[in-house]
Image (cartoon, rainbow, N blue to C red; front, side, top):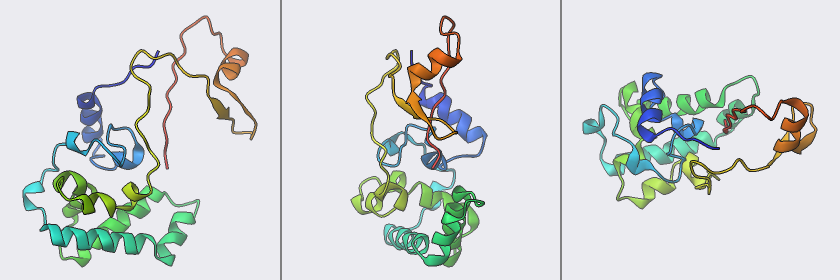
Length: 180
C-alpha cells in the first residue's frame, strides 16, 4: 500500500532542512517542476520580488549560463553535485543583477511569484525540460510490479527481487524517488 505525506508534512520537513525550493530538484515535494506551484507559500522575502521584466531577464540569463560550455562541463563532471552547480548559476545571476544572495529564492520561486505570466513558466530550464508528470497512483494503491535495474547491471522486476531476497510474509517498506 502506498502512503503519501500531506503537503504540510513534506513542506515542514523541507523547510526545517532549509531546502525551500531545491525540492523542485529533489522531487520530495508536490511541486514537480510542471505543476503545484500554487501550493507553495511565498519565500520569506517575496515582498521584495523584482519587477516581472527583470525576472524574465534573470531567467533568460540563468538559461544562457546553464547552457554555456563551462557550466555544461561542470554538470558533466561526475565528482560534482549538479544541484550545487545549478545553485551557483542562480547565485551568479542574482549577483549580476545587483541583488543580494537571498534573492536566489526568487529565481527558484518565479512561477509561484508570477502565476499569471506563462512566459515565467516556460523559461526555467527545470520546467522546460522536466519530464515529470502527474502519476496515477493514489494513497492505498497496490504497489505496481515495475522493472528495476540493480547496481550490478542486471534487470529484474520489483516482485521477483523481493521474492528472492526478502521474507514477503512480513511488511516491506519501499522508499523510491528520483534524484537528478
